[in-house]
Image (cartoon, rainbow over all chains, first blue to last red; front, side, top):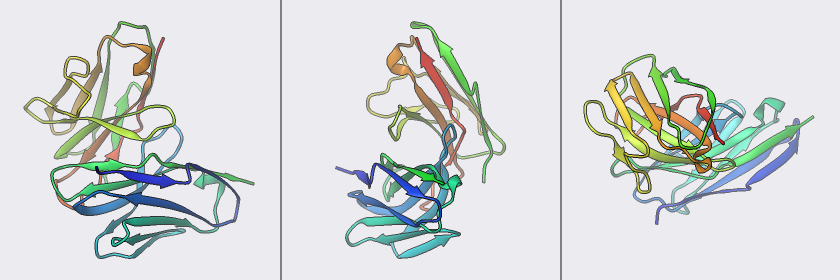
Length: 112
Length: 116
């Protein structure tokens, strides 16, 4: 069964600190993996996309990693800001059909 | 990128009534999707809106409850019919330009629906 699991479910960190969010998936065959940021009351916005051959990709203070062998991805946020408070969703696309599998998200709260 | 607008942004409705949500994109797109996001949960795909033909529904969702229209490549509607409190959720429109491995899904701001 194709699934995407994220951890932790929620996280509270101090402004300026780093944090890492995890995504484990069983989707097969794998096409790509995206991390989305969803601010409260808004639709998700893509942060990064990882394909099978990519191990690391950065977008400003966001760095995503992918281990296609273990089917794990992480999103590392450096020097967190209050504006990073949001839900972060991992989405895996299968290489067949038009299937996108959504994780349940990690709710991140950055406090001053 | 794609700029997506949804109307209404939020609504409070009575049980048994219906609400139609509109999704407008600023440019032509190949794929349009409708998602539901219940409180504290991730997104669940309701259906793929097909231009010129009936929508493709996911398991657990039926056309009588969620009729969808897509008259052209920039517009779609989702109707939530005969609503009950269990339909209270955020409904999101999503688009993608082409069915390729790297196509990105863009999401609208969502419609927050509360059913009393």
